[in-house]
Length: 260
Ligand code: NAD
Image 1 (tube, rainbow, N blue to C red):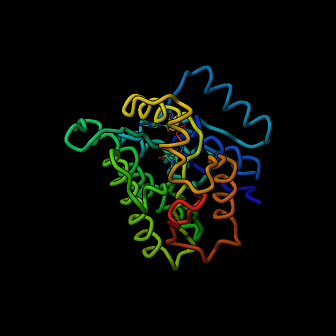
Image 2: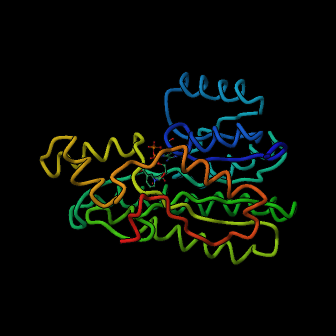
């Protein structure tokens, strides 16, 4: 389905990004993966994806807090695979604290990684997409891009921001064969959420199981974590020709969270 296409997925050494990179490779796309981790583990991951799916897989160590790294990552991907047809802005970090105790450096980092990096990747990738008259941009926002919860001010500001950015990009390129959409997951059990469970357990002084049930999944009517594969399947759909007219949307995959 995506043979001959090339994708960049930010923050894809783990969690949702890795699931999306895997799904894109399975459909025949060449993929640049990105994110932090042990070099050996990342190389095993990269080589494994390449071997299992018979596509080209490159790794970029670009830090999504650094605009120069981001520009180099897109340029490298274009050089390696000939194009960046699909861009998935997925890298994200979290910090949980009341506003007045929120460390300013954490605020800046969350806005940089979760919001501003998507501006830098998008502006770098759009030139080639416009030239070729085809492109797919998928931004991984959150239920927290549509509604708020306490103690996550920077994350919620960034995720609301990325939903707005998604709409603006969609409008700017609507006549050029390029779509831009946001996916808004509820809680997905990934390393990012594992860390939140630990933080919340400390904040509320509750055991892990109680945090999962009473704090986290309390807002998710299904009372089930969303699966990484469900997010990847929607991202894949958005990258296909059947989704050519879907653009500027924020699609919820959240067990009913924002229906409340
Ligand atoms: P994760 O922690 O498992 O993965 C995050 C990835 O981003 C990792 O590969 C990490 O190395 C990378 N990363 C972090 N900082 C980076 C930086 N400065 N530069 C480059 N890469 C960086 O998290 P996840 O749960 O898979 O989250 C992925 C995205 O999904 C995030 O944007 C997150 O906000 C969003 N999301 C997650 C959930 C959830 O419940 N897990 C829900 C809604 C939205």
